[in-house]
Image (cartoon, rainbow, N blue to C red; front, side, top):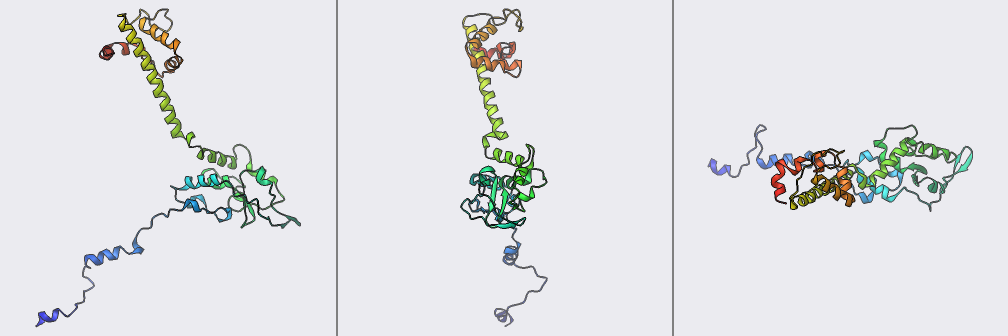
Length: 275
């Protein structure tokens, strides 16, 4: 009888009982306990008005350079068709002057805030040391329309905050000038020169062996009049080929020239025999 009743009675579980595997899964898979992932932004939907932008450091580190490039491709926000409002400055009605856009390439204007900003300093403020006066054109905005000289003062000298930021903008937009690319290009040049030196020495070896001539000379020093058949043949090849002459003269080490005995004899005899 008791067994039949158990079929219709739902027993309570005590607080100390272990939850079932399905309950345990549900407990730890709730949205509140899921670690939040960094939110990727849509780079095609970045605000144009300087007053609406957030700091570059507030973006995902993996997207910052991409965001900078996009803003550089767009260029500074310069609403030339805007009717710039007037305001009292030193008891006179003044407003932003449109011709400033032509004079200062970096200059931006916020329609929302009626203030001027600097695009270059905004993009790289976090990567150059802070300089006095930079806040006016990055975060606070500039609106003293009667003091145009402040725009020139913001640009400063060659080592100013502004010009360092400008240089970083140019470097970012020229990926071919990156350090990695320069090293890669240099490596390709060195490989090409290496092949030219090797091929020139092989041609000289083939000539000497084909004519059954001796390789070494009595005196192979740089000042010798006759350095031997092999070196003199290599010298003749260099004189007739500018690429070979440049490649051999630029060899970083004497051994890299393939003109010493270690190349034409010794451990390389088997290699030469196959030529």
